[in-house]
Length: 150
Length: 68
Image (cartoon, rainbow over all chains, first blue to last red):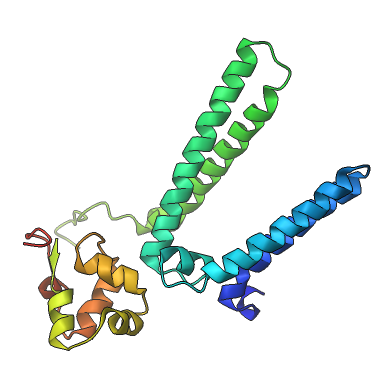
């Protein structure tokens, strides 16, 4: 489906879609929250337009925003996300530790974040090591000793 | 690791943008490779070497520091 959407439009449309769904959730909540959802739609639209403009720039950020990143730019993005993931995990660990220490009732969401991240990492490890190492049939255990008769 | 990308490109009087377009990478990546800050993947290294009509070991020299 993504192939039908122009690369420059993919990220802005993704932002617009995700933001609209989130704003709809606030609207569904009812009460005074509908005002917040209107503000959210405006923010999302501004963000989507900004991303579209950035996607037209001739730099690494523009290439990533425009879904036309090459191998180096994809690696930059991957490393940045890994750093962000490390920060999030450290924050979640600090949160759950403090929550437990002060007998707070809000400690468990931090634990859920840690558990989901840990599961995701294990899934990634399992998926990518199998994909790159192959099966046991691909393993070369060195030269086979043959009997003189063979 | 030293490489001969800049040397080969200037010999052919190409701009970094033209080389980037020919290799299918960004201009920023060509700049990073030329300055030795980024080591390309093996497929990209082959693409670069073939583009200039050289072998990979002629294009990239692991025994020399970048900028020497």
